[in-house]
Amino acid sequence: MNKKRVVVTGLGVISSIGQGKEDFWNALIAGKSGISKVTSFDTTGLRCHYAGEIQDFNPENYFKAKDFPFLSRTSQLGIASAILAFKDAGININSINPETSGVIIGTTMGEKNLENTVSTWIKEGCDKIENGNILQSSPNNISTNIGSYFGIKGCNYLIPTACAAANYSLGYAFNLISSGQIETIIAGGVDSFSKIAFCGFHRLYAMAPEKCQPFDKNRKGMLVGEAGAILYLESLDSALKRNAKIYAEILGCGLSCDASHMTQPKAEGIEKAILKALKETGINKEDVSYISAHGTGTPANDKAECNAIRKVFSDNYENIPVSSIKSMLGHTMGAASGVEAITCCLSVQNDIIPPTINYETPDPDCGIDCVPNTARKHKVRVALNNGFAFGGNNACLVIKKFMS
Image 1: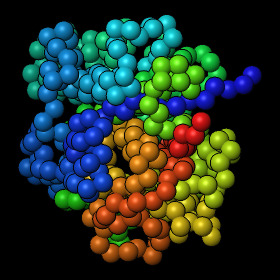
Image 2: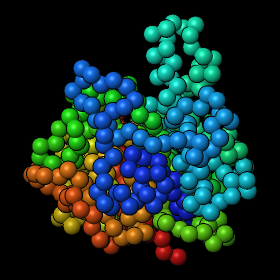
Image 3: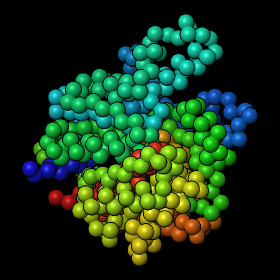
Image 4: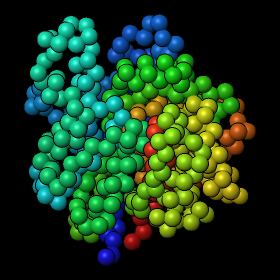
């Protein structure tokens, strides 16, 4: 069976540096930081007080909140990002074919209502929990709420593979479209700012005090962020039929899973995922012109990723720009590789690579070209989007400049 080509025709993103494709991209290539002091809860007594919170998100700018009285912030971000993706793709929401469209969403923390429900239970007792919060606490409500809002019935999946979840969702969406099972899919990831994630990484001593410095010799850790990142994927036939603008082509995703790596990726697992991605998409190592790094800013993660990149690309690794936008947004959990996939699409389209900001001191243990501090004009034909997660769930997505 001939596989269908899969293209990206719509981008929807809400982040701490911008809402909507244009604002996001302009901030990204300007090296703007979205890190600020935490406002959603009291961080007194903690070592870190900074995060990538979205300060000015109002769901009523996108849809009528009264239609969803118990909709949590996570679902709000997801629906709003999907609305932006549909609009960017030139799709009239009322004209969607519900049977040939799908929703696949990745997340780490799930619904924000779960956190709120547990907090109410602890502070006020079980009887004080609102029924609506209980019904909206299940993680799969994110994809359900998005699918319900748009009336999509072709498929509906939520993928909880932690910080690589969005890449998993995009890889699965690619498989369904390329095999002809579904014509169009909105896929990506969403996570709202989580006190549980913030305190958890704080407890693991994995967070930096104020800024994230991927690949810097003196990096001190990650920062937690939030985002919604949705891509509109469709078959090339569908895109051409409606004369759609095409950002990029998805070629596939390489996965490696090793449950023995519970708390941090290992170089061998990352290497395996990259090699599988190249093999399954038919891309030669020499053809990769940009790597969007997982790049958390933690000493062990960055070193493992760089070791894998140096090994896979051997003599050519110094010629491949590798940047981490987590230096600007923090780690947006399940949305991370979705935001980074959008970045890859825009880099492929514009031939510009966003910088790794906060870079001050080179680290010989990393030894890569991390595009320090300033965006760079660079011909980007093929971008590799890296996403890694606890439990050894590694996913590398290959995104290519579209050529008819």
